[in-house]
Length: 273
Image (tube, rainbow, N blue to C red; front, side, top):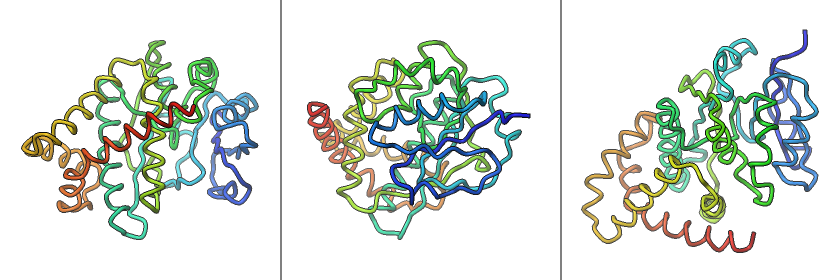
């Protein structure tokens, strides 16, 4: 019987493409030969014949081995399942631990909004999606922008009233690593910020506006921190209990400057596109 799920991992060089190759679910390593991630995914998804595709980035590592049937149970009544991610602290440097705290908040916000049918985030680093529905959404992925295949896909699915689900079960979790340097981190975040001006979904725009506004207000009125910090602390600790109070507090202090820098940098990146 043919497989119902194909795991697809896009990569840019053969050495990276050899990672995570031992897995019970059929895996395709799709080489990006310069066409970009979105076109690479499209080529690989068109080539497979399974009903579902499990999209993962080449640098993520599954926390546990799961079977095809376990994955199919997640999408029994859905068209896409947003799977959980967890960031490790890497070498334990300060910049890595701050990223780990930020990523914990992002992941918990992803889970909570999706559970309320108001999903505002989606990561292609660990995503299970109906193959035909993905291909039908390709025109909505903005091939002219070199990133954002996951968020634009989420927007397309919401606009078409397709069924979205998620899970917070660590059994389906994949492990991601932080950016090793501040320069690489800011470059990644500016890329994320640059594509955000193309978002059209009301929930995504509203959530982004609240986050930006809260952080800008903190710049002018530091007392806002007394309101923001308990909320952010609760989000992060729900996802990653190993992150210390001090790291979360430090993140909250510097976050408004970080957000402003990434927004301005992202705007200039958008002008280049």
